Image (cartoon, rainbow, N blue to C red; front, side, top):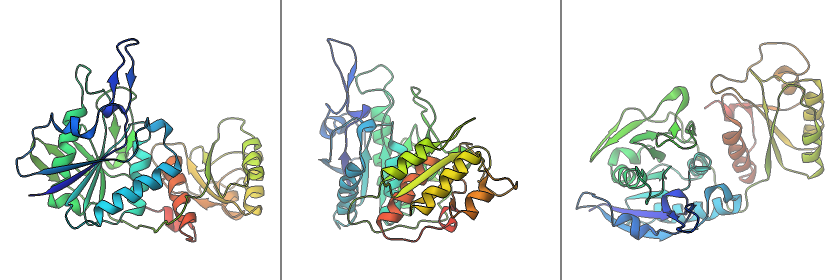
Amino acid sequence: MPHIKLLTTGGTIASKRDPATGLQQTGLITGEELAENLALHDDIHISVEEIIKVSSSAITFENLITIKDAVLEAVNNDDVDGIVLTHGTDTLEETSYFLGQVVPAGKAVVVTGSQRGPELIGTDAYANLQDAITLAADEGAAKIGVSVLFNSKVFMPRFVKKVNAMNVDGFGGGGTGYLGTVDGHDVKIYQYPAHNNTYSVQGELSEVDIIKCALGTDAKFIDCAIDHKVEGLVIETMGRGHANDLVAAGVKRAVDAGIKVVITSASDDGDVKVAYDFSGGISQFEKDGAVNGGSYDSKKARLKLAVMLAAGEEVTADDFKY
């Protein structure tokens, strides 16, 4: 009988409607209450643990460490066969990717949530949770390690992204699509991640900020980050890694101040790559010591950089190839 550990953190999937306002309040439904409404195979045993109880928009780096410790404890428990983590959707893509960086493959760790609260018409809460538990109990999912289950699809945390603010089909995998599907009690995994590097983080995550570039952006926020002595910066540029001379000068000041800087693109697909020779582009950023972030979006690059710095790893462009 597979033993699935259900870890809860709050979010829409645990929300109730306030009768006075008609608005949702997160974290009010327990994991036990959610599990009572599922139609699982009789041979699946579920145990529940509440880790935290917050809206995912309020989750901090400190909370990520708490979640990581709980997940690793379950992974290292020989009596547990798979783990499901319920989570709010606002930062689900970030928490799942963080876990993929610090939890080695070997057992399925499935992150899920819902776009509509359990009490709302057309809720996806129970369908997503049931599918996530079914996936976590599947032997093939253990080879993936950490995954995201949403709207019957299995996503790789590296590429998963919240693509709709309200629709139940709220997550996508970009150009990579999805890894497989859960259809009732049937799990089909069509592809597996090619790489699964993990890092050991014992203490706090390093402070890393994201700065977004647009037409006419200057370096004031870069200089602010330098003044605050952050450990890392992710600069979200345009196109293949383009900004302007003011941003380039700010990046050089940051690198000279000992800050590790990673350059990403605002584009949904395609890599940051040297294609032009001008002073405000990736060619200049690389000359000044910044790291090419490849196809990483800024949020995933931030978490990777924070994890690697906290783990004492050297950060190079090779780390952002996959």
